[in-house]
Image 1 (tube, rainbow, N blue to C red):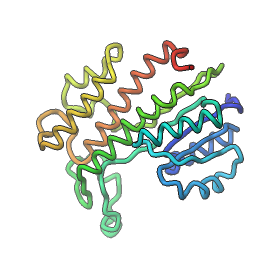
Image 2 (cartoon, rainbow, N blue to C red):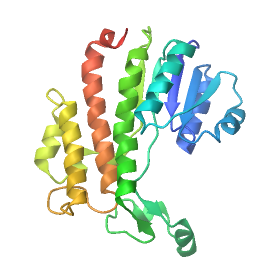
Image 3 (cartoon, helix red, strand yellow):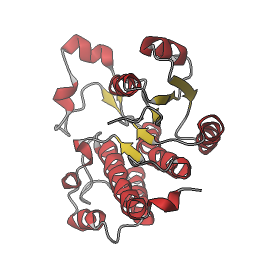
Length: 247
């Protein structure tokens, strides 16, 4: 059952999965705010959705200022939200789509094959964009919008879109797997250290032999593993004491 007075916020909804999510929620009568880093497609997407209860706001989840401004705008215009959908994400690589098209290459050939490199490049900027969007961006959004989550008989919700790439079994280091799976004792600082240790090893060329996910897809897996871990922390802390996130 959907309360038609619910207000939902989703970012990264200009993508196909996100756009369809927005369409389904708007169809159910929710007041929906969708966001994107690039503001130009906003009006066209609003027109495509065709629902008067849908709004658009520019948002860069990599920016503290942008997230803070967005939270303030939500408070002023909607007095809070009921649902947050963290859908924004990037894969941390650059793909030569023309080469792929000319050689009949598709994404399925890359998935599950760490040694696949045809038409793929990666640099430190793409790596940092991936981790800043997929992990730190999602965390930034949760921290900024948790105080805006409204008390609700249906329960406020945070939906963090993830993937199979975030399974702990993707880590070859058993100690890390056990540490991140220990929900009762897991801390935000532990997850941040996990991410920063990986970034340090990438920068110093010491990824191999430490149990990190191999190949160009390693950073994407790390970002999703970290996002999933932080989701468990938030669910543990606020699921038990939901009153703590209200003003």
